[in-house]
Figure 1: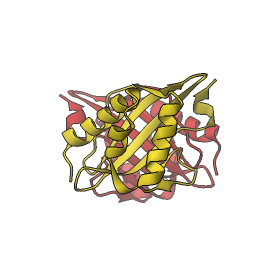
Figure 2: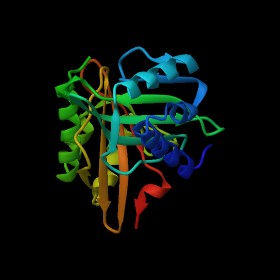
Figure 3: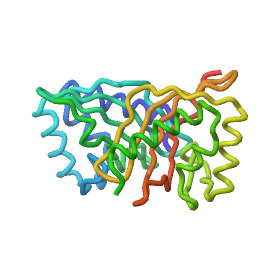
Figure 4: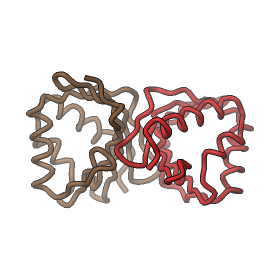
Length: 120
Length: 120
């Protein structure tokens, strides 16, 4: 199981790399067969190509993330964070939960935000 | 599927009722066969009796919750919140994810906090 430090650093790297428009660093946090459910309740995407497309779009859209509170770990293989995403003309309040594999890669990302969590 | 308003109100009620030491209101948010994994990574508990004992202990311990950011919904059956729990001598930073059934009751609660998320 990855350490608390490893998981929390991965989430911090995720925020920092997205804000730096560094898609390769973000997607490099993921395992090849990872699943992304963003938002929770929509059909998930999975696999390297889909993940790369997902973050290319996020970065092209100008998404900038700000943590709302310190990143949380767990007593298992998950870490979570509450943050706000600003894209031009829109703000989204989200909570992401990431699940890690034994090698420390993210195997699942679940983004909790609903229709009411968007400000335009 | 429960509405966004219903789920967010349930989480707000959870916070308010715990802070009011109102165990019956908190446990009434749960379905009879609900599962609580708190913290994530420890064996879950389930069922009415276990849930009532869990919150009786939390209230006896003097737990007081403060939201760190607005409650998040989803596009499905889940809602999430980042909060801080103060008990005498200890502070815990957590993110809870609640899953709801069609009747609007919580069927699963997962609390993300790790050993490093405790301040003493």
